[in-house]
Length: 223
Image (cartoon, rainbow, N blue to C red; front, top):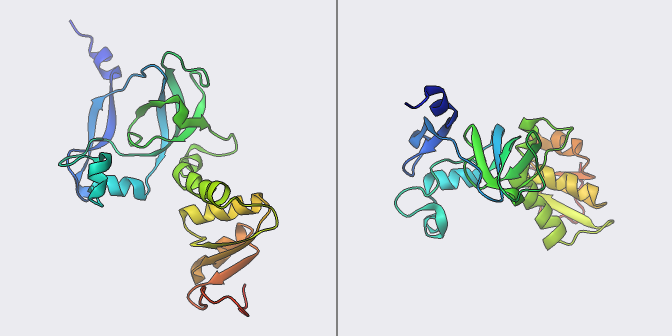
């Protein structure tokens, strides 16, 4: 006879979707709890952060995303959630970087809007001790985008002048801080209501795009 308690330990709650559409397609359901395969880490989700990546997969838009993996008629991944922070619950064979109880953060692509998610070890990194789980979960996708743009594509160097348009957005706020970390002279562009925020991130100059044309900076007075 099956033990009811055993059945409950093999189940978890998750936000699921069976079709593409608006947020109305999302449902809180009980689903099987994943088990880590070789090279995977099972993470107990402490926080997950929604972002435009999840919005696109929820709606199945643009349509090309369906051809490239989202699913043609219905979602390939029935549980959204790409940015996650949590604690290691179990590890699969061959995992060497993490152990049960470790606090981790990462961009996992899908599955984080649940109590547990099992992902390849390489998708995760140690959660900084000075960040809460909620803070850490907001960083992965936006942080990687900012870092790749500045360091990998832009080859940023100390002393350079860097203009960051959308400096108060998810990627922008992290880009300002990273650019300053690399020793650049940073000018951030944002709306009036976000001037103080961008200044607080240590931008050297801040331009209010509602008052100035950011395509013609010569002679412009910057705050």
